[in-house]
Picture 1 (cartoon, rainbow, N blue to C red):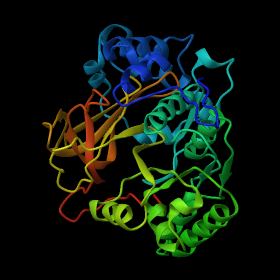
Picture 2 (picture 1 turned 120 degrees about the vertical axis):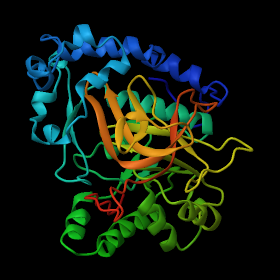
Picture 3 (picture 1 turned 180 degrees about the vertical axis):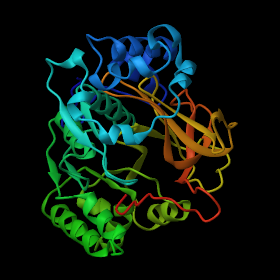
Length: 382
């Protein structure tokens, strides 16, 4: 792990060198996607290295992943992944046997679309920290102390922020945050206001008492916090605010930038516990803003995961660049293999960006199934 000192003497990373730097620090990012897919098939379906979850399914798959999956496109043989299988699985059944002698952690999803799912982490968090830290260096805001207005307990987001600050020996000031409380309240017909106020009050106390450089939170909570701040955010010492989860609408994003984030960089990501962090790429000068977008696109780094935007009526057909569809994600990690998971979001497919030379998504919105827009997602503070 590289070392960024608090005095700011960090290795120079620019957006012109970002991709090459990422591949140098995380060599797996330089592996061809088809070659990585074959490697993951050997890992997940070998009795010596694979998890009980996947090895036990081998006899009923109807094909041999070691022989028949010769590249990424062949993962369609698995069909669409049913998240109910993950919800029903024991966390220990998900741990790869190849990591049986390694420390691991159990993370849980926020329960936006139902009961939470559990996954195990051995190496993924380290990948996420290294990639995100490199992006922060390119933006000139790596280092310093951090305020984590993020889910805590079993949720990966809080652990990620701690790992990031650990990489440069920064302090993390965390609030007590259980996202399921507000989701349960909303499902029962209640409101989120009281719990949101509880989270904002904790954050205001820490902002006043400590001098932090980075604020991590969700887009929904950033909106609430901004409207409660007695003075501009930059006066508290904050150089950048980093958000995760579902993105803001274009109008909300414009409001935050114009009214509350003067002098503060806003770095957004799109993703979740199962898919990982799709990194924000800033708008290319002169490029048109997509309808419903904020000017940014989001790029999930292969070969660890791949975002595809597909026809809602035919999840095996990718839409053309510039068209809207439903997000389908495949996660290809030693810790976690999830093929062809339909997400709860729709997005516009974008092409490669100068910073991230692979397709991305933009103008992310909740996926509305049918003319009434029905669905089971409860976002709450996300």
